[in-house]
Image 1 (cartoon, rainbow, N blue to C red):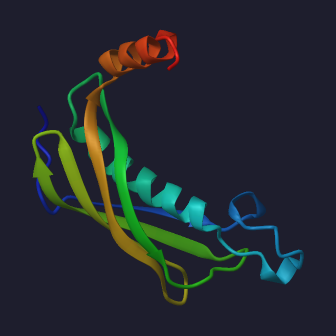
Image 2 (cartoon, helix red, strand yellow; image 1 turned 120 degrees about the vertical axis):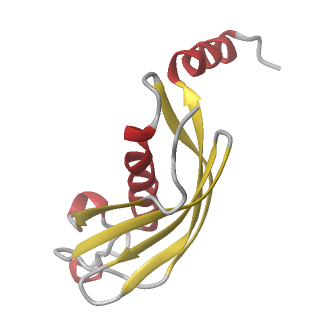
Length: 134
């Protein structure tokens, strides 16, 4: 299926901009990296780390996220997202994830992804969409 060594690591950096910050508190100085965006960047880091190791036509989908958002990161700060493969069981890949801004660790936890054949996955989704509701 895929040769994904335990210990494989990946990283990406993201600048906290208004597009990934909360806006609901109403004060510009209170705008910080939103938790859903932190999780999304953790997932993307994991996906992008293993994608080059997969067979052509395969990708991964997230199946489990267990993270804590430990600290707020204001607009204009850079955040580094990192991941490490901790286990591979057939098509299931487990990761340790972490996010750090320029001052401290802001998030940590685990994430799991599942390897899929993209064409077969698309076919199953089309069948699901066409199935009678009920």
